[in-house]
Length: 374
Image (cartoon, rainbow, N blue to C red; front, side, top):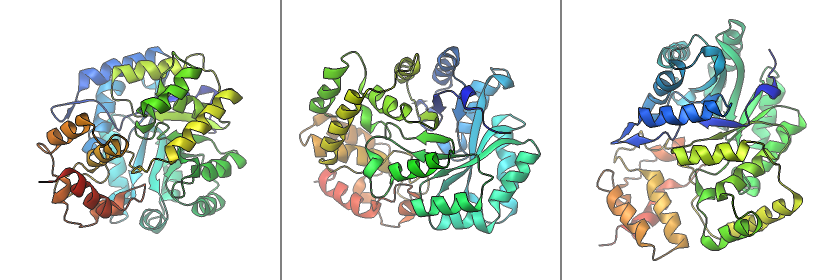
C-alpha cells in the first residue's frame, strides 16, 4: 500500500514534549491541543516506546484513540534498538505498544534512531527490517520506515539493501543544513533524489530556532512583522519538495495555534525570504552553541538524575547573554528537582544514546565550571 502524499497533513503532532504538571503529563491540556489540531483538519500523531518514560503511547490512547474514530487519525510509533536484548523482545515490545496505544494496528511504524554502530547493528542482528515487513503483510503496520541519525553513506547502504522501506524520518532545519554531524542537506538530497517521502523531525531544533537573539529575530520581523520566529523555521522546511509531514513537538496551546496558522493556506517561501533565512543562518553559525535538541534520551539512565538538556539550555542562553539573570534563576530552580552539572560522574551512559553525538561529559565539565561556582 503506497503512501498517498495528498492525504498527509503538512504538520504532524509530535508527542515527545507534551505539557506536564508536577512531573506528570497534563491530560486535559493535551486534550485541548489535540482537539485544536483535529479541528484544523490535521491528523498525524507521532509517538515512541520511550517518550515520556513510556507514557506518551498511553497518552495517545487517552487523548486521541479513545476520543476519535480510528479512521480519523494516523498514529506512528517506533521500535527502540536499545531495548532489544533478544529476538523475542521485538514481538513483546510491539504487543506492549499496541496495548498501550489501544489500537489494533499502527499507520506508520519506524525503526527508531537508525545510526552507524550499535543501533543499526542491532536492527540487522535481529532481522528487524524483515520483521516489520511481515507485520505490514499482516496488517498490523500500514507503512514501514525508520528515523535516521546516521551518515549519508549508511543511508544509501540501507536504501540499496531495503527497497521495501516506504519513508524515512530525518532531522532537517535551516541551521543543520551544513552541520558536519547531522549533514541534513545531504540526507535530504539522497532521499529526494530517490523520490522517497520524507518526514522531518526537529524543524525548529528543539525550540532553539524559535528563541533567537532579538537582533536576529529583527531580521525576520523586518520582512514579515506579524509572523513568529518559529513560523520561519517551519515554512523553510515546508517549502522543500518531497516533504511528507513536518513534526512539531508542541508543548503549549499557544505553540499549537501558531503552528496551525503557519500551515493554514500554507505559503511557500519566496526567494527574498530564503535569502533572509540564509543570512540568519550565517549569523547563528558564528555563535557557538551546544547542539542539544532536548530529546531527553540521556536522562532516563543518568545515575545522578541530571536534566542534561536543561543544563545545556542554560549554558546556551548564557553563551548568548552572559548576564541573563533569568537563565541563572532557571538553573537555580532546576537543581532543586534534578542533579547539578557538577554531580556528573562521567559514566558515559548519556553519550551512548545521544542522537546528536554530543561530547556530553566534556560539556558537563564546562557547564559545572560556569553554573556551579561556589
